[in-house]
Length: 403
Image (cartoon, rainbow, N blue to C red; front, side, top):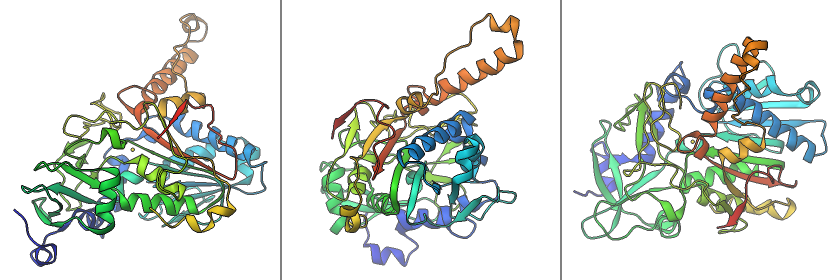
């Protein structure tokens, strides 16, 4: 059943982008709740302090590539309640920490008791010299959803406050152009796509704010060749997958077309983008495009995990000529973390006799490292990396192939 989008709005219908924006970030929205995201799911940040340690080592690599500047910026986009940025500051060598300027970017209010060294912002700063890191940020940038109708025409999906859906106007303009390029829909009724244009624009804006350094976006993702036929729209509440209802009661999320974001960040269609052979593929999505987590199941681009586990054209182009930039690459988390020293190697059993406490700590660390790099889980996350004005600090993190 279809209805013109303008007429439908008068009856309480609106596109998924507006509905998600209000449900997640409006007054009383899901991400403005006191418990924050960690009250409902765990990302790599919550899974282990090894993740923050790896990001700290990456920041040190960026620092070295920059020539150890007097001011080293670390920008955590989608900072939640500051868990990652706090862990990174704690893991930095003293000399590096003394030069670091820490910025947490989040639309929720600043948490009480946060380290005074952390500046809390609603949007990324400009003129960044250092590392901009966005962990599971892009998946919560609201977007429109399209569905093919009975005549083979892609139409915008409209939704009410209770989650009921219907079809609206045909997709047109820049949104239609994006679908044609990045997520072409065959004329088969019921096929769906998520129009990632707002995410491309958000990423392009973030990259444009970096004068020299590295930009990284980590998320569960897919590429043009592996888009799920019915999309990935889903929701989570208290660690469990639930029906997506835009009423503020749940986290509404979709996987990220990181290849499209990479091309947008380059400021030219497809320019310089490379994809790791297995990176950001289907991200382990189930046949219906959904992932699931329960009481700790991970929204990790993959299958169910054990309880307690948890990713356009324009804005940057104007000053691109003044900022040498390496090609954007999409890698897989396991390769990146291993390059940064996160290796799940079990300690020798003999250590249990000589140092029982040390053995247990090493064993726990090995288990956490294995979780962060697991195939079919967090290890399948895509890492979109783009160096600006410096050599790629992650040149050793897996081989890439041209997109």
